[in-house]
Figure: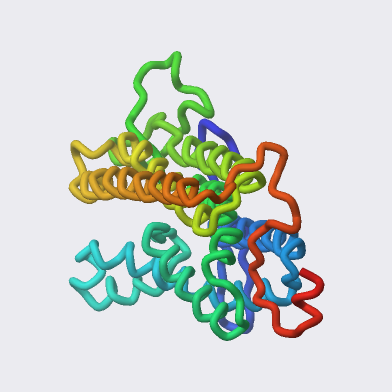
Length: 298
């Protein structure tokens, strides 16, 4: 693999009987990102009394729903998938990419809601813990987009700026072969940065709902920034322009909700910020107590 040349999209291939199969780097990288996110969730969940089996069960429900939602969000705004039978069959083929995180996350959250109801877990507290970790998975998963030679920005013609990570060579870019802004890498850095910031805040902030609000604000703002570069920018792509407006409004609205929640809670006399970290006995519990012994242990 060369930063200034074409990358191999297929990691390896194999044959079973007369069937030939190819395994793409895109799928491998996304799977690894999910596994890393699962491990981080298990680590965080053990401090709240949730077992590793609980999170494995949760992921088995959430991940398929998130993939379905991601794919639906991608194909529903692209009429070429419905103009022919061959195009329609491609709806079910995600090996070449084509997943939209903005619609995948709500479907995954729906799966989490179903699981929380079945397992008697506080949904909002659970989402506060899990959803920020999605930023980590999204950031790592962007390397899958690189292997697919997608998620790049504007063409860079200045030779002095044609170096990674500022730029990446795309053999079949929208404007021909050349160096384009490495948008996938920009977003990866922003995802990991905001993930770290949320973790730091969560260690000191005791406010139910803060995790999901910070995730929505963070990722909406990241997408708002990225849509100025992705695939040529909003000036030439109506889909990207719509995303730009949507993410801007979402960022402002949920930032206002977060600010209101902070101010109103403090006005009620509650202490929500602990500079040295929220004491263990004051942390919001995720799993509902089921027995008198559970209450005693809290």
